[in-house]
Image (cartoon, rainbow, N blue to C red; front, side, top):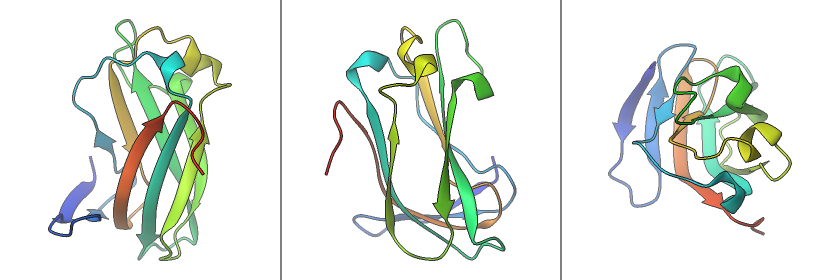
Length: 130
């Protein structure tokens, strides 16, 4: 999946190296009611990329759609400038998310090319956080 764990010894930040064009973090099986979670928040730092910007992509599967697909995806532009930033994806109006029934697995592609990825947290929230 083009992602190599570099360092998880720090208490709050886990570091990865993207070695290709499609790095991804995939959850174990889950059972999530999409209406109960309206926001995804991610705190991360992207660096050592040949591009100043990239895309963060959030995917999910359902019992009937077991493959990660562009139809069940949200894309958010992110900066690859070495600054630790908070990103929030609103899911409250995303019909693909709301109409999914039950979410069975999650996937986060933190960037779309080679580089260094440092993630402090990934959270699903029932409401928008400050």
